[in-house]
Length: 95
Length: 493
Figure 1: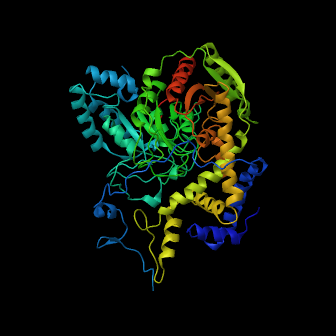
Figure 2: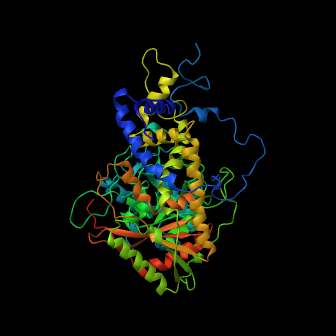
Figure 3: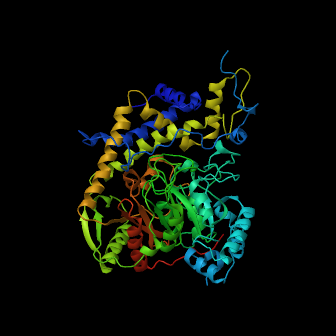
């Protein structure tokens, strides 16, 4: 399967990474090299094989649905690029 | 007694307990060594104040007679571990300025055991790399050189700073993490010991995530005994990590009996690669003979899906990374791009991530996005997870036949020159012997076993059964004793 510039543009968009138009051909060619490597997997007979969900058989633990470490808004916001009035601030989302 | 920063953990522990040395002296000696080793670019954030405070506390604790093995031991911490109030940015520009408000579970345990943090260590960005060349801090440099040739060599990756720091005696030991070989490959490139425990042994809480089903923390140390001591302090159940195993942690050091008589060691034929240097082939044969001489039984085994481990890894790891790294959006922490008039929130995400992520991270996030996207999920992601099941089954069948541990080379070459490998796929081949272990969730250790013709260290890898780190360390201890590797890099930095 070969990735063209349109697919590369679409993947970059899905990944929310800005890629300049001029860089798309090089990106598409890198994808093709990596996917070419990955395509060896097509040789494997996986008929009837379950896809791995968990590498060690274990039941995920559950805990009580209670607040364990709450009331720390200031610490949670301490690394925010823009925090105002106890909230993360972002550019306007809704017109 | 060794010069202070050159000490091993066990040696320092005994000297501290006897009062022959103080933790503050050890910390000062290491801080001095770090000060003089800027050329290695191993330590990227220095924490001398924390080190001295922890060392003073350790001395008091030792004087009080309550001193766990790691008490007063100066260590370096890979930048991937969140350390409270100290920059923790996974070698990435997107986390510039990030100072966590919390401490990772592994470093919490180490500090509770009395370990002393000297600073944070260089690494490939988000642990994606095999040469430490994707770091936002620049390359870490291997203290080893090819004889008198001054070419700067890679310490390996992604835990390149950890490996360089331990090999150059800047600290007694360091934490590392291993998603596809990131502890074992750099350990092999720098002549030190590195163990990746069974998936679930060490809590992943507070370790910046790369590929959550593969990531494990482990120690990087000067020998196997030290690996046993430090691993002990890092392991254990943690309610904050739902994949952390609720199993007792045995006394690993006590399991180093040196007796491996009757142990069955498997030699997998699929690890004999085309184009593998004959020195590595020869080292592997020597390792086999050493274990046989120590009384182990050697059997040839087959792990038929080995060849598909790297391609499966390069679907699964980028898929998980694309999901884990979605959190770096410029909203809650780290870098946010400056916006032009009229640009909105999607521009903010896209520009932030284009500016903050380096080329390799962008590549892997996009590959991950592609293999998870509608129409390709089954062909790539699900197929890779099925192949992963088969890779794990290969190991289970070998263990079911009575194999106790598996011996392989650690890497397909010795350390290479910085800048020598530009092709991403070529770089991925570094992990050909290590990546199977992450896919199968098994413990494995790299032990230095010899030097190549150019005087560079080469390592062997032993792979163990799930949760049998104690037995694995004991076999590694025998191999280490037989190999008698004591070489150190000549100081040029």
